[in-house]
Amino acid sequence: MTATRVLVLNSGSSSVKYQLLDMRDSSRLANGLVERIGEQSSRLKHTPLATGGESRERTGPIADHDAALKAVAEELAKDGLGLDSPELAAIGHRVVHGGKHFTQPTVIDGAVLAEIERLIPVAPLHNPANLTGIRTATALRPDLPQVAVFDTAFHTTMPEAAARYAIDVETADAHRVRRYGFHGTSHAYVSRATAKLLGKAPEEVNVIVLHLGNGASASAVEKGRCVDTSMGLTPLEGLVMGTRSGDTDPAVIFHLARVGEMSIDEIDTLLNKKSGLVGLCGDNDMREIRRRIDEGDERAKLAFDIYIHRLKKYIGAYYAVLGHVDAVAFTAGVGENAAPVREAAMAGLGSLGLAVDDGLNAVRGDEPRLISPAGARVAVAVVPTDEELEIATQTYALVKR
Image 1 (cartoon, helix red, strand yellow):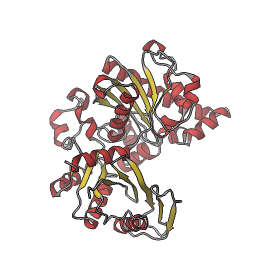
Image 2 (cartoon, rainbow, N blue to C red; image 1 turned 45 degrees about the vertical axis):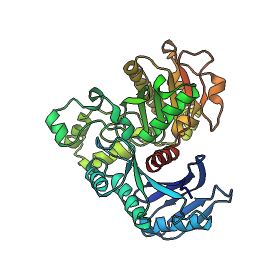
Image 3 (cartoon, rainbow, N blue to C red; image 1 turned 120 degrees about the vertical axis):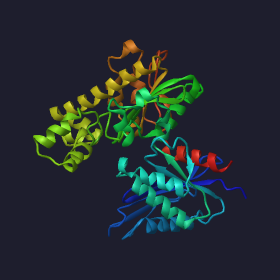
Image 4 (cartoon, one colour; image 1 turned 180 degrees about the horizontal axis):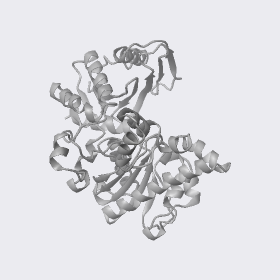
């Protein structure tokens, strides 16, 4: 029997998202979420997609990631999809930070684990949780290939002119300070899906990808390769996000420390968790912000205007970087669902060949679609992202060789 199934794990500090796929046809067999790990109110929601059955929920204390994955294995086994199945080819793990070293999906061994651990200082919120998930899954199935798929990998093709910050080279190299970029799995998937939507190969098109969720990032993709992206050393840089500030004068940090007498940890919390849309208007849900705008809320309107202004700046910058643009693709929760964001982002950019058709933009759907007017010089598209499928595809391609 040929093993064709891949289990995708996305381990957070107190959660595990998972999806089981059959790579013969990329079909979903099951998915779920374990949240609030380590608390008395832990919750596991499991959906057996292969059988079309209803979702099942378990509540009660789940002590750690080991217990969480064992609980996931139990739920999968109820559907005949257990981790001990000979049809399981590999487990693919989302790893947020791979630094410069990891440019491709990688079978995990001791040296890989050590490097992921060595990168913790530049990804303190994510890499430790990713490591926990890897170690737990390895303990449960030590005979199975465990594959790391890195959020940063797609962006490693950036030229040094885009990746380096203009600070002292020796200092930057000593502390690995450079632009790494994130959401790379999504940017890779969406850029290829956009090319397919246009009926072309990825190597034939230049695409600006706008991944707009609670976290948000933009990328300039030239002939299938990333040449610039908005997030940097960490996911804090770039676009206005749900709770993150995005681009800020670095001297703001010095000012807040000296004049505001704030600690480094307080400033870190401010910029990562109390800024962006929530800092500007108290809400980070775009639906709620639009509702408030419709009711005449000026603070919500200003937050929206700042969000769009930053987005337009990046669209213009990446248009200049690429020189020629075939498509702009909106993806992720806000990008896929918030028609007013897409409309506002494209407004006034007609001289660049960018526009949306009001009717097409208003249509909701789960499939990639064009929302630009017929005959537009540059295609504007909505392309739902599928990071789990991308991770599974990369994982299976590596282990089936």
